[in-house]
Image (cartoon, rainbow, N blue to C red):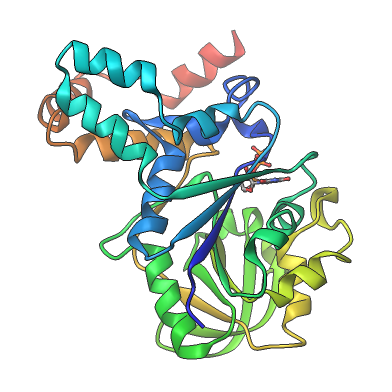
Length: 302
Ligand code: UTP
């Protein structure tokens, strides 16, 4: 079966990015001038996805407005003859047909996916986390769809992470692999390094078969008292094989302050319009003496 639908869960509370996320969605935080979630929607479109549902929550209206038409703004830009900008704005609202459903309470990623059950129906679907951007030559979702087309079974996007980061992710247990495609034997959500079966981590992209919905309906809250998608995937393994595909591309976790800063700098350096002057600025900054780690620690304690 072909993968034509995708779910973007974007209803989380974004507590790692407070206070910025108190009244605005973290998925709308801009990387240079483009909201994070727009990069993700573009990845879905470039991967051949035809129908998209975004799981939203309270304080997430800005996401719906962003992908909607803004007639007033379009008229103002036309009046001012800012035609390039006008086209940009129109392009966003015509990217793809976007649907929305509200997750009434942030009960975890598994619960957010369950909210898409009626929309997805009985077909395999892609999941792209709303706060994970991947810069890749071939869109990651497309890479995973190709693996799915070969295996006709659930495929999770993974990459190796450093030991100190293992406890932040769902981790894959495996015994067999064929190049970059691993046959999954087990999954553990956010294990301590000493208990982790590998350092291969689930990083925000999945192609999942619809059987997951029946499982999610009875998945109890797990780590962090949230309904975990990883726990439901473990149960799905009793019914079908699950594969983990190491994708190529650089992934940025925008929900984390450091990940957001890294993405901002690297995306800005790549930009035709501001890349040059920004490179010069960074270069001149590095010529100056940066504060030492001790100085940073002292200013924090003052
Ligand atoms: P995260 O765990 O990164 O999001 O979930 P969070 O809960 O907003 O983050 P912190 O830890 O409080 O800072 C990954 C993705 O799943 C969505 C989030 O919006 C994010 O895109 N999510 C998470 C939901 O849609 N609903 C939930 O209940 C939890």
